Length: 130
Image (tube, rainbow, N blue to C red; front, side):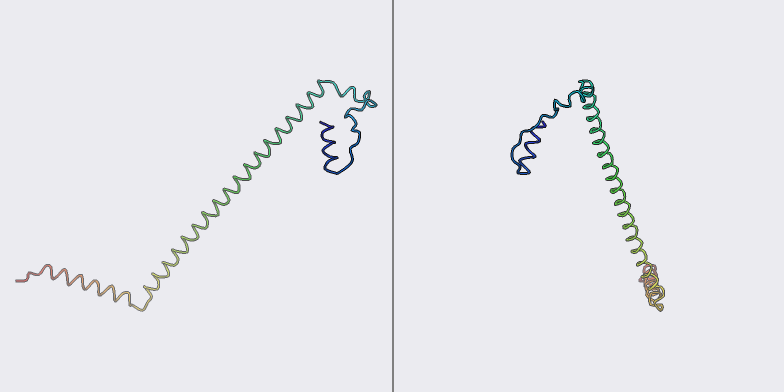
């Protein structure tokens, strides 16, 4: 693994091929001896895998929380816009009704004419033609 990584690095950096030293140099073997037991290496690999898995789960969980927060804020904003549109429509209708009521009596006279027509029609139905 170390040799492959070193070769790739040299290839990317356009360096000349050098003699790649092994990862565990024999000069420091006595220093690293207490840390190179199989149990310690196995435990280190397991701890690294656990950390990687927990990091992945944390990132996924944080993404879900942020996504849900964004979705709910968009939903709330959309609902707020719909309510605002409905209020503006109702305000427009109220202005129209006020205009009809305060329009100098034209609406009232039109309503009065319709009532008179209905009254005359009702009287004509009740009266016999004989």
